[in-house]
Amino acid sequence: MSKIEKLTDAQRARFGEWVERYIQIGLSTEPADFDRANAAALRAYENVNLKKPMIVLRVGSPYACAVGGALAFWMLQQLKSAKPTSVAQVGDQVGDQVRAQVGDQVG
Image 1: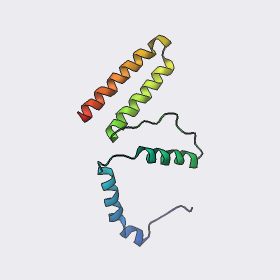
Image 2: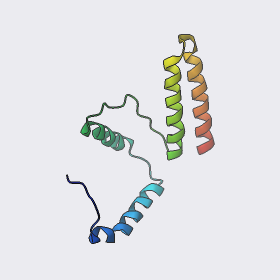
Image 3: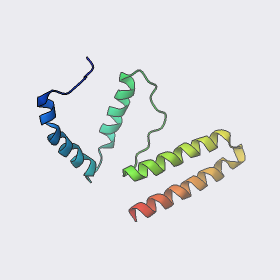
């Protein structure tokens, strides 16, 4: 596929249509189809010859994704460097934080 250097007049004319479409997608409160999204994401990794992720987080909102992703990353870092006796403590702390954040968000 060749690189697009500039848009045609016909493409520019459809900008409003695409803006509206993706605003509606972004504002949608319809339930997510996690299985379909997961399959598409894994195909993307495959298409660019990247190793598939070991963990896939399923969350209910972009905010929960930001918080949950950051906490999951932190937890994995802690688990890598933790002494075996403190792994349960780290898990409890992260679990408490995630529950509190999600509880604050969804009520």
